[in-house]
Length: 124
Length: 187
Image 1 (cartoon, rainbow over the protein chains, first blue to last red):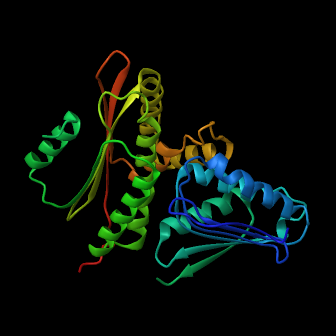
Image 2: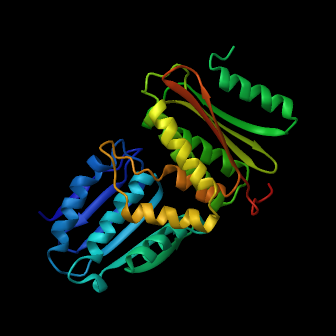
Image 3: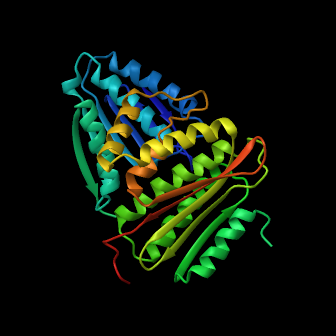
């Protein structure tokens, strides 16, 4: 499999796991009916990518997410933290310029996981 | 006439309060995820028109999603009163008011949680939130139990609630949250 892809809906984000470039992207709104069900195949794909032991670039570009999504996002980040090469992965946390709420959400994940985070402010 | 007497009372209180409400958004009755997500889009657009800062709009969306998800979670517990969500805007603050039925077991658990959390400082609420985020798990419906902490983290001390017993098996849970934007851009 070269790519794992889920298209976005009004309640769920687009998810792309690229097994060639080792890039992961989660983009849009995350408020699924059931976070366990929605994130299960995503976690399986990411777990598979992590086993390649290559550096991963993970783009988070979320407009907003509910608290059950926030828990699954942390679970995903902890997979990277617990990998054999956590210091080689990079999380790029996108947020709209001046949206300090979303910026803070990323900072909380960095505080917990100690992964390398790059904060990218996007002009509206 | 509004059938939900709690929503009706709340609107009467607004009228009597003398507050200058410039905008109001009310959802009354059952909802699903599409209603929730659409409502948040409407709220966002309204706050953009009113010149609120990006951070404040984000804060409003993050509080709204938790309040609405909470209503969705409990609305199937054979409610005797319909749920409601209200967002009222005046020149100084935004106020969220919600109401929904809960069963006796949920009432006991929620009352204990609220009494505990509302005795915490903001720093303690943040610590509790981080602890639950790190160490908690989702139940089989995908609920994290983080919703109320997510709201309290942002509401600071501007949170009020009450429970009204409406039958042997049900309470009606009302809560209200006030937030303001110090960085509102004047139009």
